[in-house]
Image 1 (cartoon, rainbow, N blue to C red):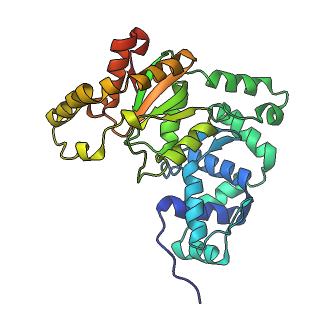
Image 2: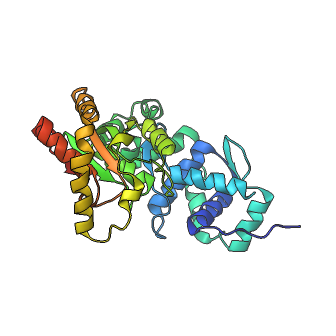
Image 3: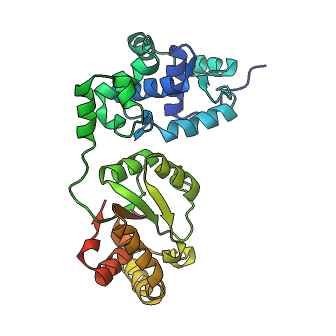
Length: 304
């Protein structure tokens, strides 16, 4: 007896439809590049966002969806391939994800495989090759393409201390901001580094940062207990909380402020991170101001 089709997000439906159009069984690296090209070219709006990774464009969110689709029996549990199960094929047909745009896309790119497919994405979208460990091999003597990748590595002209909140970000857009600011070390100043939003709990965020060459450090001592963050309804409420934080918490954490200074002296830009997009509603601005007061203008913060 066929299982009923589980609830799927639109992006998951499109992912399954694309996979079926490509034959329903595709190697990991190839499918990630097919999905990337599709997301760059579709007029259906952004489906998945990508970061420059070890083998080019990569979407953490697509792999999170892959795990969910495996749990639901729509994809096979094969660590090397994206492969539809029989239930997955039936689900694609029932939800109507087999459309002409997927078929046209498969005809346009389906003959490209392996390093030829990777090289095509590198030539057309050089930013996403900036962290690649195989660019030299797959592009060979194509010096023009290699130079475009080199130019795409250009970062912000600002050096020093940054702050960033992940509110409103996907994991990919957050990491891209860090990469474009040339962040070498991300300092998480949350008391409890857990999040219901995919990608921002400590373990996942640390692993993602490591994958793009950014060090991750967590200093819970610089955080604010969650019970103190309740009933913050106005900016005056936030200001009162932060006044108390400056008086009661920061004076006891000089060693950790000095640790951030030492990390800065070791080289590279540092970003302080927490949740809120607006730095004036997040204690990270108190930390950056204290670093500036204590250690000078090298800690004048730029808020991403």
